[in-house]
Image (cartoon, rainbow, N blue to C red; front, side, top):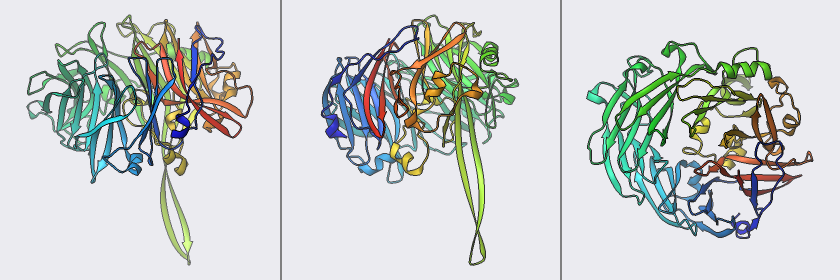
Length: 546
């Protein structure tokens, strides 16, 4: 791959994108071989550069630096010294950020049977690996960066076992990786036996905010609370506040985001509906869920408002246009905070299944029984809802019919977790025959008051104007799909090919969505596009600008 990347130069092309409220400018690099062995990520830098990382199990990491005009100005390969290259396939991504003009990658890797967190620092101009170091040897670690500065924090946990009495250690860092503060996070007054980390927010050098789920029984759902906590610069202990209205909640899934306009944190929790005492509004296999928003002042550690989310207008749209007979029960995948403090909720149907099989064979007349477990998830129809500042659904909710399938077991908040947690090491999926979900689900851009959903789909689903979900073909083979961009114009969803209509059945252009990198203003997006012509495939880095 490196030999091909050394030849990368700019190839700017405006592809026809019709039917959109505003046609984006599409710029793509010179083609290179599809990176089908390893894991890739993109990072948009403040100086206009784009860093393309490709981690392999043979050569370490390749980094291509594209300048602000999208020319490939530098390409370099670096060996990681902290572990053998072949072990990279077992590593987990914990974060990728710009700090001090450098690209900083956080990776979890097993060293001598102990999971450790490593910080890899890459030169933002050349792409060279300049420093690598282990910063935590606790069994699990989470990294979060302040979205409005380059300060960050690492939360490390003493135990990976769910329901164990784990200790949480939090370390607050400056942009130049100097330690600001470190403290242990403990149950307030020893009132809870089990503490589960749910989210973290870093506010410059001032404080670190933590959300946890505290309970006293292993299965949770009894004598439990969501707990919010903060440790200020220079303090040695956390301040805590129990959210009393979350009493007896069961296994909440949480997304946490900061609104710099009103200086509030938004904690969006998907909760077991029965434990919240409410009828369910979201459903995935064996999980009936409701959605609750808590708006929190992190400086005062106080809740300013809270509300459960309902979306009857989305259900009405799904019944009228997609021909649903029941309400829309898709699950929450992510959310966006808009400039006017309204909230855009991103839903998606998620049908996760676990199936068990038993087979018996006879050897010399003697029976031999074997058991097998099969996992699968269907990514179904998209749902887009906008809430006003008080949490009420506003007119304009809509759904987009689609159907995608993967051989993995996935849960809500898939889109929210995607950029800040794990990656898919692609060769592993090819060898096992499992489907690579890096191409699945969708991405979302909100530009000039228009929301655009971006996803891969089979061409027949684009050319067919019907929105009936029963008539949509399921996406199975990645190489036969194209990237689609869709938005709602009044009461009708419009879709078109983002990279132009391929025009032929043996041609396709599709995106590796898990690699997507957004600009700070959300008006630009970089992705990796693969173009197939017959049996020939080439890859491009593509920049999409509205």
